[in-house]
Length: 250
Image (cartoon, rainbow, N blue to C red; front, top):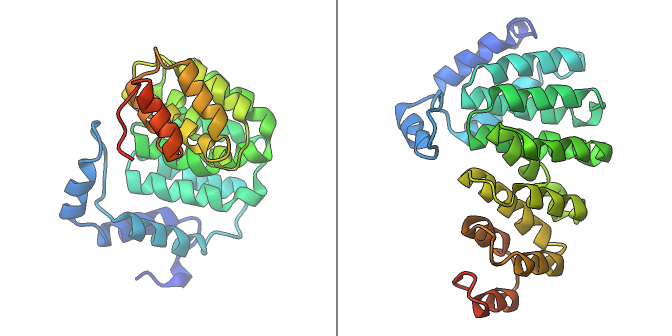
């Protein structure tokens, strides 16, 4: 363990790398890589340990200027290592009470430049960007423009950013707009993303999501459909079965 008096914002990233190395193992590294189709960079540290490291070492910098902390996050995110990106996401989320409208450019740039897999997409979108959108809802239109991007992670991000707000019953009109824009996307992970978004929305708007599924039954990709009805009531799932959309075990 590094002594506290030697840790500050000038050397904390060096310390983080050292601590990740101390907690890495080959078994975790090999196991983690199996969750991804893409080639990813891993230290081989368990997620629970990474979360613990995030919290512990944020204490050393929590009183620094927000922009200094975001700059540290940028360096971590740009490394490409999943564990470092998770720490960057956690640190950015810890700053949520200080978010300003100017921060959107930073969050969008990270997603566009550094994300190469579903995990480094979902973590910042679910928490940091999702919280930002709840705070500054006018930026929902910026999120909708991501659905037209050539970058599949921005397209997936448009959907998964709204997972937590959707569970709260928010942005239902925009959720359907995003689903419409992504409806025929060829990328499996994008289909799963907007299916997940619809599933989350069904927790508060079950009837509306069900009606959306029924309306689009003939063309909706099976992957997106399967995800979207997962949380629905047994009765509505049975109704889906009656019209032979998809067999679902209840």
